[in-house]
Length: 206
Ligand SMILES: Nc1nc2c(ncn2[C@@H]2O[C@H](COP(=O)(O)OP(=O)(O)OP(=O)(O)O)[C@@H](O)[C@H]2O)c(=O)[nH]1
Ligand SMILES: [Zn+2]
Image 1: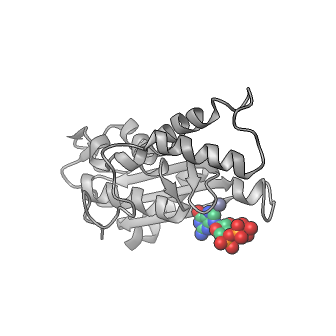
Image 2: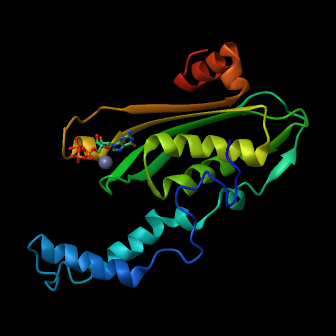
């Protein structure tokens, strides 16, 4: 079980400073030279700075902690399943630094106090972990563990379906192949029926 802030769920310790943009610019210029391009030609002259700005956004999650987005936690007396599905998700494969993208589905059953969070916070939580160099399996478990830690629910289920550009635009080149990962915690791990109910809601059958 993860321990939350400063605990073991962070494979990369969040950095308060964000990315080092001048360093990225230097590195991108080097890459352009290394592929045989002219980094000073018109179309490329601003590219290192653009990439640095893009990486600031793409890896913003490295300087965010889950508790920063799970700020709105309130008691609503609702202790049945809450499920937000089809949350669009973009992340970066840590092996090739190319995108993988798809959908995240997050369900939880509040604790007996009916402690819930704002629905948008679930989508924000996906972004905190997606905007880091990732593998899909770790992204899935980090979201589930953060919810267990900060919302103290009776259970959590996270399902992510994604297409990895490292498998489509290069390498094995299998466009359309989808990777599905899931993480179940608490009652979703213990009770087949609860897990099956969530899965049927996620895949759209009742
Ligand atoms: N389990 C897992 N594997 C991933 C993920 N993203 C990329 N990979 C895989 O990481 C592996 C890296 O394999 P390597 O043999 O080290 O790298 P490679 O020579 O570029 O491999 P190929 O992609 O097969 O050309 C590949 O099989 C990728 O498909 C992910 O999120 N989870
Ligand atoms: Zn990859």
